[in-house]
Length: 208
Image (cartoon, one colour):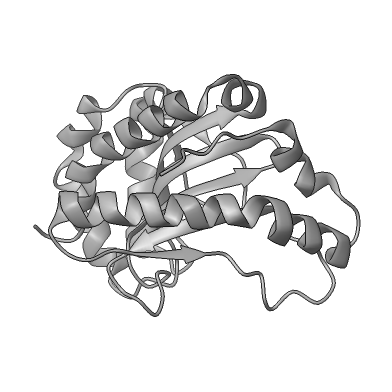
């Protein structure tokens, strides 16, 4: 299968004014790439984790006024949705590419998931310091894992456990400049390497 290369045109979709105009560009230009990644990496996750994973490309169907500021394909072992489960994502903001493992506020068992992560914090020591962590999937902002290990990581996990809106995302951000310089093969390799690093965390989260 052909590998995906990201271009400036992909990122600049999120600078187009107007809901209809941005959605047209997103549907026609970016979404086919998410569908391709969905096919490729759902097979990867199914093979690596021993259960069938399904791709979920963001549809932004409920939007009536404000155009989407980001978009993505998510992966989870449930055909009808992913938000209630820990899930993997590949997506774009106008500024960067993200490749992450996410637990968002819709997950009903996120307090249990947080406790599992709190009990296995040594796993974070095995991840690259240039990985990022975030407590809000609606924001492009994040901090490096190296910085978070000093004083923020445990706080994010406690918030995930104790606060209804608490969330936790971990993975890699690549700036638009970094992402567009990489070849399709290099991007595919980096994406797979990032997910390889995140699989042990996922297994802890789901209690394997």
